[in-house]
Image 1 (cartoon, protein in one colour):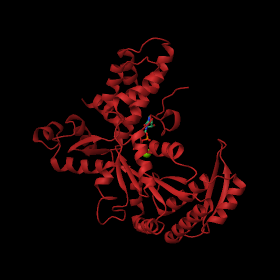
Image 2 (spheres, protein in one colour; image 1 turned 120 degrees about the horizontal axis):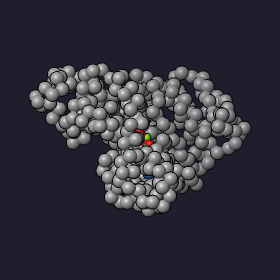
Image 3 (cartoon, rainbow, N blue to C red; image 1 turned 90 degrees about the horizontal axis):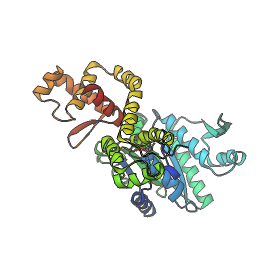
Length: 373
Ligand SMILES: Nc1ncnc2c1ncn2[C@@H]1O[C@H](COP(=O)(O)OP(=O)(O)OP(=O)(O)O)[C@@H](O)[C@H]1O
Ligand SMILES: [Mg+2]
């Protein structure tokens, strides 16, 4: 089996151990504080939470719940997601679990179905459409669960910036109310670095101001990640070649895993041979080529000024976009470029660090470099 994972978050055997971060999360949680983990895209936030919940947390002391807020667009999605995941994580078999759910919650009833892959799914049917009431019900249920089991609750809200989609229904304010009211529950929030700088946790007017300690998740060091990769390649990938991959991708874990995933198949065919730079280049270029259709389709969905803006970021390495000469080369006005850049930033297609713009999706950035340069 291929030991590299890039399609989903990883934990367990495929997780490159992040000892310091796991110790820190544990320390913050046991000190009865909350934590906000932030990083660039695809640096391993979700994987870190999953690893913490699966392997590091003391299961005799804590009940853990993981909520992915990625797809939520309104408060109904939000509460359903919460009910559903609580149901999924209760320990009993499904008969007893349905009974237990009935005992815990008054504002939702549940049906259980077995999916095609054999997994159980619990679907909540809400009998209230008042968010305050629903949150009160959820928190009361969690408190009851905590008392029954003698365990404290830890909740992970992944992609927490999505909470801003609940502003209209005052969901953010209400959630803060219950976070304060049930102060025994601990939280792990995640988001992109930019959300730290923008509103959620840092601005005084935000509902979540000062609610959590912050932890920036950086790249895994080259040396440490090489150890992980080398073991899986059984010494067939030299440090120098790995270093090239790492530097090219700027240490983005997902892309390194994706390249290694494809390289692994080649290494299996080549049996005991050491991998050469030609093979690595071939795999790397084929990977970018395989994205042609997908990325072209994506570019076609952008407006012309946005396409130009993306090109400007790539051609100018993210800096001095508005320099006369650069504007002239792209035949664009400053105001049109400025508007397009703002749109791309808002849609998280590009991001900014140390006054330098970059494309958030590293693979797209490398593909654009090939296409535009
Ligand atoms: N500790 C790790 N060891 C090995 N690979 C990892 C590790 N953490 C993450 N990865 C790789 O990176 C990919 C992205 O990880 P993950 O989804 O956890 O990142 P993320 O920061 O949550 O991404 P996003 O910004 O999209 O939410 C995973 O598919 C996995 O291949
Ligand atoms: Mg994630």
